[in-house]
Length: 293
Image (cartoon, rainbow, N blue to C red; front, top):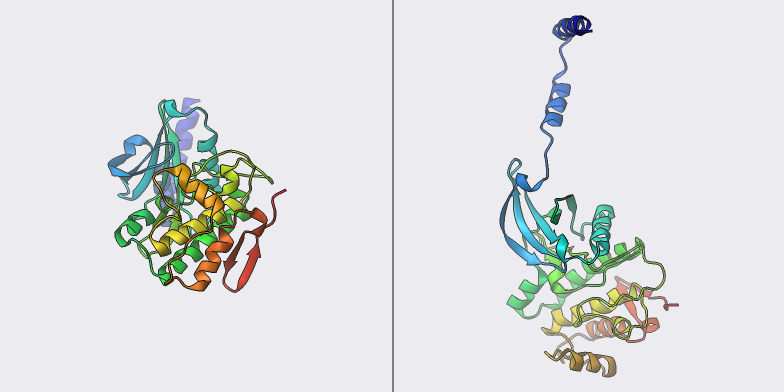
């Protein structure tokens, strides 16, 4: 057998001399041999970008390609179950929207899980709001339209986001939004879900009242966010969350006099306590949110 293989090898060498491999094929073979690896030892970690529901997000540079990524590191010991992580992984794998963060790779070891996404270098909306206090109507409209497109895309793919807030909205180098952190999102929802989750300042009444809910909760959160961007604060904001929530559930929102009536109308439609009255606008069309059943 050894002699046979030796003869075949000699024949192959002669064939290669007569018929050299095309340059394109050589390059392809070289690329395959130098296939990029995404494991912990292949990265240099720079600094913390933020903290999510289930872990910290680090800026990391790939040692070989010099490309930057945002890597979420999750400690397995802190997880009661993997449902939220699996859901976030599935969502990011299957979504393709210019307004949603892109997932590049995942890997794990004995103690931790790693999710590598694109690095967006414009900071999050929370930082920009803190710096500017409030945004102009034009700037708010720009962000709101892109958020509507992102949420509409998610809903069409049976995904409820459930944690819309400035900290989860990144801005790229051109100022466009990138929705991130899908740790609380619900994937492949049917008609109604009951899990109580979200950030109290932005959460919809039906979640607070444990009534069961659908994707309408995202439109309510968008209304609160638009109010914050235009007015510089959350409606009825208080460090005592119970007081803030009670006022939101029982009193109409107060709007500053300088606010455009069309903006007021939009916020009121998005933040109706009764789900069947909740609406959202996109361009010249009005979308009426269907009643939960």
